[in-house]
Length: 340
Figure 1 (cartoon, one colour):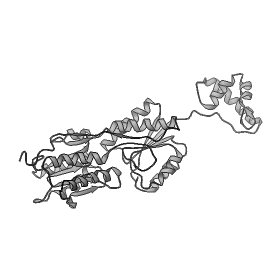
Figure 2 (figure 1 turned 180 degrees about the vertical axis):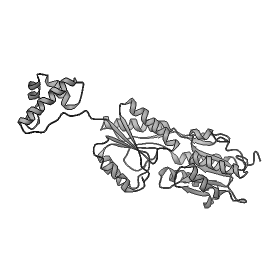
Figure 3 (figure 1 turned 135 degrees about the horizontal axis):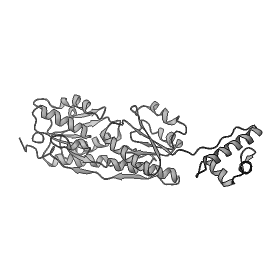
Figure 4 (figure 1 turned 30 degrees about the vertical axis):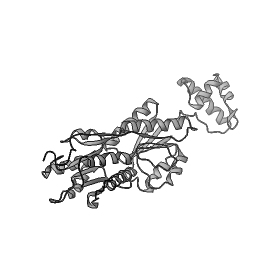
């Protein structure tokens, strides 16, 4: 049972006068070995290795560490996903390193992941990938799970929602309350969720026979209140503005409400606004935001557990989990003309 060329566990055990099982635990970093015994074993190894011109040291216990990559760590929606990951990892005795990959649309930003050696054992990706060719490179290095964002036709596990169906629920709610001039405030189409939500918006508008005013379909680079405030002002031309806005984020919805109120436009009397995510901000605006609730915490919790299951059971088949969403009706939407 040689382990280091000609050096055996039995030789180390005899040298230190401890059991073979104790030496084995020390070498593999499993179980508990007294510090004094560890020192004796290390000294014995050094002496035996010196005799055989070997350079050997005790194996250290392997740290169980996960890496979670997000487009940013300050988005209020992401904060709840992060909390779910943290709670699940703590419960399963794993560490998590959170990484903000602001340049996730560029291939070079993935060099860090591919060249990080054994820094982490598994990876959660909470953003889109710029090229599906990255998937086999990443999964060859370690197990990978996508969270919230996902690639439907790729052989990679994920936990997500049905963004298309959720968008249809939101837009159909606006249509059912008499709105016909509906804007879409979206994020960048480099995000899969943005593509699916806009497709839902367009399909519902077309099915209802309503025109889509392309100038009212906006793509903002970041989910940022300040960015949105500077961009959505273009919606409010004095004689031509929408009667409803479907926003793919509650942050965008809050900016629309702020600008509308500042211009004397009644919400929801003249303009209904619906958001997405149901973050805490949705209840802090006046009026409170009608929104699509998605279970952010559960997305993180389940994605983390799914990854750990892969690490601990490598034969586990690829699983894809779609969580439910709900329409939460609040005061920012109503029948068109009410309250004028």
